[in-house]
Amino acid sequence: MIRKDNICFLTGILCFILAAALPLWIGCSKSDNKPAEPENTAAPETNDTPSVIEADIEETGNAEVNVDENTLPAEGANADVELPGADGKVKVVEPGTPFDKVTSSAKVVVVDFNATWCGPCRSLGPYLERMAESYNSDGVSFFSVDVDQHRKLAEELDIPSIPDVRIYLDGNQVDKVVGNNPLEVMNKIETVIQTEK
Image (cartoon, rainbow, N blue to C red; front, side, top):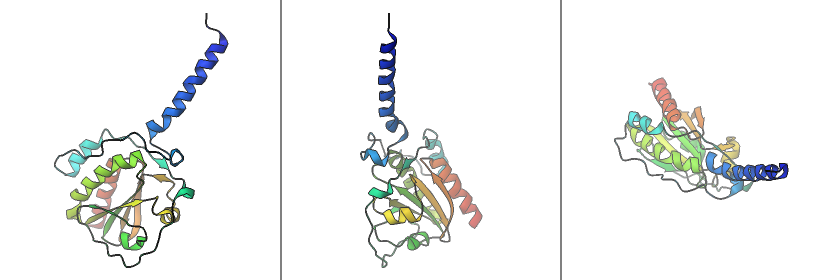
């Protein structure tokens, strides 16, 4: 016969196991300071039209990760940076690059705020790369900002969770998507493109 003490003990162990596994289910947090299990970040090799991306996205869940701003390094200053407009690639924003140059580098600009330790960010990356190729002809420019390298900017823009994708039109933020939701990002880009035409 099972004693009441044994049931309480087993329940406690089960709760401990579930609490330890929770970060692996929802992404990772900055306090863990270690990445989630490696994921396959290679984009499937297919034709890069939005409808194909849409079909590939259906399996992707929506996850976000909290950013502990106190552990982020400071960034430098570099006002002489020249940024290309839409070129079909996601361009990495280097520390010290003035953010207004990023947002004004094209009519429509998509900025992905992420971190290398963030599993949902790594999962979203290949979809954004494919979107950059797909929306190149529409003049949409894509950028990636690592919040670990851009602490001050993350604080100024109030980015508490990543991935955080922001969409700018004529240098002004018009929309954002928090979490790993490439289909929503694509729909919002489409809306902005239709609005500006």
